[in-house]
Amino acid sequence: MTYVIALPCVDVKDRACVEECPVDCIYEGERSLYIHPDECVDCGACEPVCPVEAIYYEDDVPEEWDPYTAANAEFFDEVGSPGGAARTGVIPSDHPLIAALPPQNQD
Image (cartoon, rainbow, N blue to C red; front, side):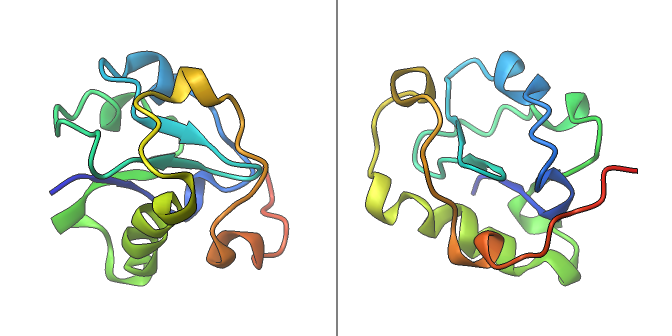
């Protein structure tokens, strides 16, 4: 099991979760952040600091955002397991689900 970042993060990328993560498993794409499912240690430190409530334990992802569970995992199909987000910086892509979304309002 792992934590998942869902729709509310798209075009926000607050990064408070990145600062809180003790294992550096939250990677940054162009429009969203992603939690590496193999590197996450399920500590939950990221969830309460997310200002837009975009982070959920995998079993608790709201049904409407179920596709984000697969999107978080599939994002790493090409990226692999770099062993820490700080090494990679911003990855110049997003999962197709996120890339296809219209710009999200920041109201």
